[in-house]
Image 1 (tube, rainbow over the protein chains, first blue to last red):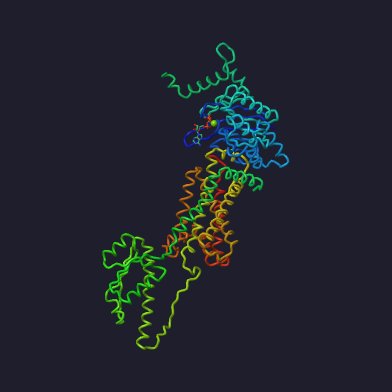
Image 2 (image 1 turned 45 degrees about the vertical axis):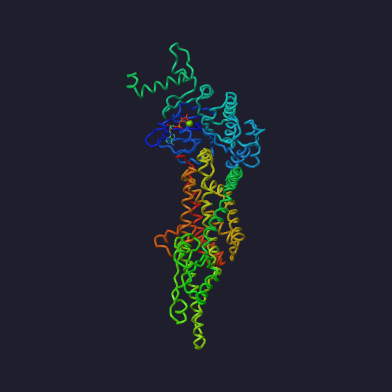
Length: 259
Length: 377
Ligand SMILES: Nc1ncnc2c1ncn2[C@@H]1O[C@H](COP(=O)(O)OP(=O)(O)OP(=O)(O)O)[C@@H](O)[C@H]1O
Ligand SMILES: [Mg+2]
């Protein structure tokens, strides 16, 4: 029996004639922290949305925690926590009210609800702000609270779409500590990011560019595949830039010649 | 359908309402405002029509006729003139709405037992009021003519005329013929239709615009649970609006409520569910607050106002239009409210209308549920 929690095979999403995600395939093991990288508009969010069962794929297939994202999206939703790219808690509700709402939505048993709520408040460092409206919270607090609400029900798979964008380095660090804690408990984490230091923290990486998965492997594997001319390992940033440039050359050789 | 989820959604939605006091105030004040505005503006009773008289006859007989006009509650004598120019000026300037010209041979013709025409000049710029005023003038003149006939008959020594037929129209259900009694119940229905659809027209669209919907549809919550939970707080507000409207009808407009109060609120509840679900469906489909609100108002106000039988009698409409009125839910609610208010009837008479209202509510809730897809497009 395999232990893959996310399996994607030739997954595709078209918006009209535009191909946002182009036959992407990968597998993620249980407890893995899988980083999904790519420039703006590459198709990261689109892929995550299909995996969360809120966007219907145009082609290919995928399973999350054993459920088919195409035919069993509502069952997928019982197994996941999703933190969308845009802050999506209710700004006019207080910290506690937001947590209570998701506690009710996820039907957390009453005896457990209190404990989970206190856990989230403490994890997010919001003990003193529990009765304040979410709108006044700073970015780092908001992001930790959003994560808390998304994993209130302790799902086995978590999808985080650029969870740390626009947050100071200390808050990012704390956020990644949380990600590792989850991973240690066997939770599979799928996270998109633009930050190269964060990419280094991931067990495995996928690089998506113009909807296509152009690199897949551990950070070390990716670096070894494209060594510098002097034989030393390049930084991840160098790897990605060279991969993307290589892809551009393949797609538009004539333009390259003219240059 | 999980009650805990419904409760969580309802509680959250209720908090949105409480945290936005301005919108809440609007939701409660709008029906009061509309009812006041339309209630007084649409009251069609015509009384104390200002009258200008040119009495060319100037005899006891002619003065008697003028006295009959002035003595009725419908007319009040504003001025006497002695030429056409002044009469025209009185009407043009709005000092009088009606001019009565009694010819110089009026008394002679009456004494001779002949037909004695008088001339009526009416300001037709408000044709509705003019028509009603002409009707009243006809009645005043006819009663006077009848009295004259009886008097002359007696004077001729004939047997006192026993008019075999005494026609006294008796108006049922609205004895005072106060148009307000007729207007207000229908007006409540029309206003509630618009308010209810507006209340819910923002709720789902707002979540799409703020991005909270994307989070919500990634959870296992069911569309039915979302719809029910979201309906709950607006249902409470809607029922408060109905209560306010009923209180205004009672204490501001003094419309007699002859029927069962519990039935009135029960029917309002059924109607509200349908209208609220309709607003929510619009919100779900448009995913835009501005568009949703506009669609909700246009889709409810005009049909409710024109096709519900609130002002324009459905039986007098062309067949095509009449057919359309059957899908206007306000039509049933107007009929029910009028029935309860004016006739004091219950479900034994209003059963069919009530059933159709319930069908409408069920269809709308189902429609909202079907249209709420837990998918991005
Ligand atoms: N609903 C949609 N209709 C049409 N095009 C869309 C839609 N959603 C996304 N796209 C397009 O698909 C492409 C991929 O979008 P996506 O949001 O997945 O990018 P991303 O990798 O998440 O970028 P970012 O880093 O900016 O978040 C973009 O070009 C975007 O404009
Ligand atoms: Mg994105």
